[in-house]
Length: 86
Length: 189
Ligand SMILES: [Fe+2]
Image 1: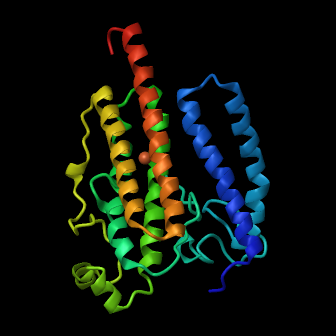
Image 2 (image 1 turned 30 degrees about the vertical axis):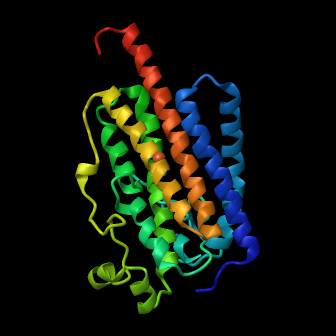
Image 3 (image 1 turned 135 degrees about the vertical axis):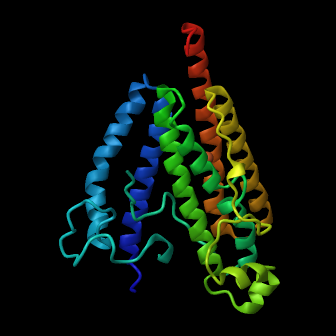
């Protein structure tokens, strides 16, 4: 199967970075529930994720099940390359 | 329920085919202090840990599964183009004879994964101290593998994973403090 373009890989890496920020902040907030700055950063990042995820899915197809199929993609997340094939 | 997202927690790259490094790395796949043990340990503790800590345990368990997927990706990439000669030189013949090029939950010595790697004591403090120790052991294992590895791309991913174990250990320490505060406020648990 064709390997993704540099542009596609860049978008994916941006999404990975955003999602990692969410993972890290979520763990932190479990033990620092009163840190409003962290909470605000979490919510802002979660908001940015929505648009970026759409851009990534235009390149790679759906990332997860239970979501509408991406326009232009014949099918859902079962098609295209898997993470270890990139 | 679980929803799989089709991407890694952190990008995994390897510089070249290197089955010897894969042999070391499998310790973090199916070894006593590896990612499978970590994920299963935390998933299983959730049912008896105080409510305050369930969210943290769940999120860390999920992250450990994503670490497991990173390790699998590393092992796969390091071995997928290996020739029989390279497999022999790496000392992977016993694995190859048994499993071909499949991954397997075993440690670096080829011993299959065993549930006795995981404790479940049903006592919040005992369980969380076990978790802290497990994170420290996982961190040390990553360091040992990095010491043996000369692959800069692989080491980038391994250093990321090593740092995550430090963060998890920190969060578990904070969880212990939260529970201790609870204990002193409320005599009956
Ligand atoms: Fe961990």
